[in-house]
Structure formats: C-alpha cells, structure tokens
Image 1 (cartoon, each protein chain N blue to C red):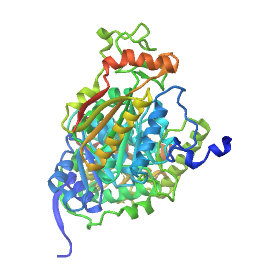
Image 2: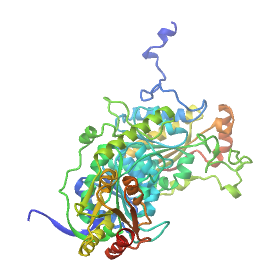
Image 3: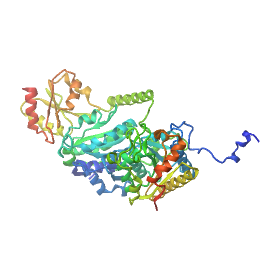
Image 4: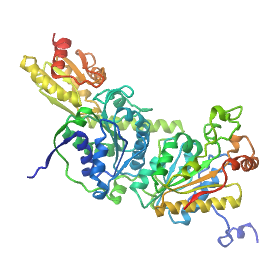
Length: 253
Length: 360
C-alpha cells in the first residue's frame, strides 16, 4: 500500500466540507475563526440547508466570512447584523438565517441591535466569537477584554475603574424571554469542537423550528492580538477567559 | 362610481399606497411628524391581507438596516422617519448605495438643527441631495407637493430604486405629511412571488441554488483598483439617472418675466403667489422640481435665457438656491427667500420678497 491507494473514498475519515471553497483564508494561523467556519459548513451540510441558508457577516475579523462558505451572504455595517437578519428572516420565514459576529460588533456597537432582536425572539441563530479583543483593527480593547488585560488601547491593562468591566452579554441575553438557547462553547480541543458543533446544530434547528433566538458564544483565542503562540493562547484562554466566561448552557429550552 | 376618492393625511396616504403597491416590509421608529405612517400600517394590519411585514424597530439605525436586509433579498422594503431620525439612517443609506440596494426612505422633515422643532421644514435638502452619509453616492429624491403625490411616489420611488439598484427617498415635510386632501389611492397589486423576485433580482440573497454562484451583498472592497472601478460604475449609473429621470412641473412659465423655483410645500404656497403677482401685473411662473436629484438643471438653464430672474422659495436658509445658481451659471440673478425653524412662508411674504429682491 502506498499513499496513492490510501487516498481513496473508503478510507476517508475527515474532509473539508463541500460548502467550504478553496479561497485562502485571511485569518492568522492559530485563530479560532477557521475552525468555527468549518463547523458551520458541516452543520449546514448535515441539515441539508445549503439552499436555504443566508449568512450575515459582521465588521471585524470575520468581515470576509462570505468569501469562504458557498452560501448567500449579506455583509452588514458594524454591529447591525441582527437587524439585517431580522428583516431577512421575517421576509423569508422558511430560510435559515444566522449572523456571525465578534465581541466588538455584537457587544459594543451592536448591543442595541443584538438585545432587541433577541428580545423579539427573532428566529435567527447568532454565532458570537468572543476573543476579548478587536482583532481586525490591530488589538484594541473590546467590551469583553478581561480586567488588567493589555491591549493597544489599554497598554497598562484594562483598568475597570475607568474602562469598565468585562461585559458578560450572554448572561444578559439569557434573561430575555425571546431567547431559547444561550450557550458558551470553545474550539480549543477536539471534544470542544464537537460540543460547539452540537450547539450550532441546535441553534440552526431552533431557527428552522421557530423557537426564538439562539446564541452560541464561542470563547476564542486571538493569538496574534494576544501576542502569544496558538498553543500558549489556548492555555491562556482556559486559565483566564473561562473563569469569566464559563463554558456551558446558560439557557437551553 | 369608478374612482375611489378619499380624504386623508399625506402620512396615511404613504401607508395605504405602500400596502396597495405590494410592499413586502416596512420597518420604522416613531417620530413626529410622521408617526401616522407606522400607526396607519399597524391599524391596517396588512400581514393579514397582502402578507406585508410591518415592524417597529428599536431605533432608526436598526430600521434602515432592516431595510438593507430586506432589500438584499430583492424585497420591496421601506422605512420612514423625520429629520433627526433621518440623520441616524445616513449610515445605512450610504451602505445601501455602496451595496447597490434598492429601497425607499421617507423623510417627513421638521425644523433643525438638533432636536429642533416638530414643525415643517425643508432644511434637509443638502443632506439628501449632496450625500448625507459618507462616500461618493447619490440618492434618488422625489419631492411630493400634495397628498396625491405622497401616494403616487411610493410606486415611483420603488420603480426608480429597482431600475437603478439604488436607494430612493421621498423628501417631504410636516405640511404635506399632516395635511388632509382628497386622494385616489393606487390599485392593489399582488406582491411579487419568489420566482418573480428571482427573475427580477438575480443578485438577491434568497438562498444559493445549485445553478448559480453565491450571491453576496457587500459594499466592501479592499483592493483600491477594484474599488475605483466600483465607484466609476456608480458614477456612470448616476449620469444615466441624470439623463433620464429628471421630473419637474411648470406653472405659467410661458410668458413669465420671473420664475419662482420651489419644491414640495413651498411650491404649493408659490401657486397663490403667482396669482397675487399677476393681479398686480407682474408676470411670474413656477418651476417645481419633482426630482431634487436628479435636478432639473437643463431646463433651468434654458429658462435663464428667457426670464429676468429667479427666486427660490424654501423652508430653509438657502439650500436649493445653490443648485439653481449652478444651473443658471451667472446668466441672470438668482435670489432666495425662506423662513426657518418650522415657520411656513405666506404667499404675501413670497410676493414681497419677489418685489424687493427682483422686481424693485
């Protein structure tokens, strides 16, 4: 047996989902975005929603999410994705509509759009990447930046007396009657990826079943913005992010 | 009884015309003096009849972004507001222009700046036709002067918006929005089927089918060489609009020595001024721009060779007067008369200004 006859369909245990195209990703090596993109592609394929899914991309590192998954996409203004998703789902109720947003997009400039879409119980799925930093603009402080965490706009560390506290927006969203799923996951281990996949699948199923708003917060790394190796970033996330943003369901009904 | 004529406010006419035109979604936020639009829609409950979605958003920002989302699906999506709220919508309008999305925005203007007053004004002319948001873009702008035109311009606005894949605005004010007049509403049109939308808007994000590439609605392009090409495409489109879509009305212009130039409610006042002036032997006509962009530049330039002067009458400190001066290009005097802060000019006031500034 040589490599040529190993690469055959019957030996396939892992593959890039068909929905993902061959465009080179702009994400930094070690970034969580690529893994979450793949999970979303897998789930859309599993559920057979290729022709029914409309994605809403944010402003932030994932602004080009629309380049990697071969579905229809709308690119929103910063923070406005839930407003676009609201109209899209209301006007096309049998479609699966999801937003993909970072912490700056969802928890700072888009707080109002996020909370009110969730409060109305819009039948959309919100995939929320929380890495505690603005990646795209070069590592500035985010609403979710941890206490004492250094960023380019908190060079001496986040002083919570003057810069506010880490915003636990998922906890706020979980209180809203329109929300059916508010859960935190991560993608730093194979087991965590599997859990994220189950939760994103549930969120998409909730959207199609009209159960209300589902939010999957993926606590993520930004090794470039955190100025760490990918492995060190994973360890740092477990040690520092998880105590503030604990993994698990806040609401699942 | 073949014609159904009813009495209603301009704001109500917008709402009923939207239902009858087959609009798919209205997204709004209350603000005086236009709240009757969303109130009328909620009362009419068109989701039970035509299937139209009506939603009260959490802000004007959210509402215009809902229009962006709806328009991205090829749907007839609209919003309405008044001046302070329209300022908030500028972000979304710029993004719609950049993503080449068709949609309808109604501005029932009130006096500013800031929170200003709830009384009528035309002080958002610059904001509307010079680009209130960022970037080089144009907004197709219709200026109704009656409740009938409020009703009619819903259809016209959507037709032009979809013809050119560009946002369109009905720029009106508290006078036209609040006053009651008789109106003949348009006939009911069936909302378009999804198949019809797919044919009309092959770019729409309705879900990617196997027979086509993904549709992506975006205004983003980081490659400056490509972004310049995008801008050149927009500009070429704007030139086509300017060539083909100018609309205006002429009243007693044939023998006029002086021309009043006014739009919307100011133009209604000028109709009476023409009568008063002619009783005094002053031959005055009115040129009423119906489209503020594209502006009736050519016809104003032609009249500059035939009349002695032009007076713009506006509910502002002198905004459209700049475009009239550009059109006339120094051939004849062009003056401005306006009242500010929610005060509406009177026909006598306009006549006095005409005599003082022009006739002497």
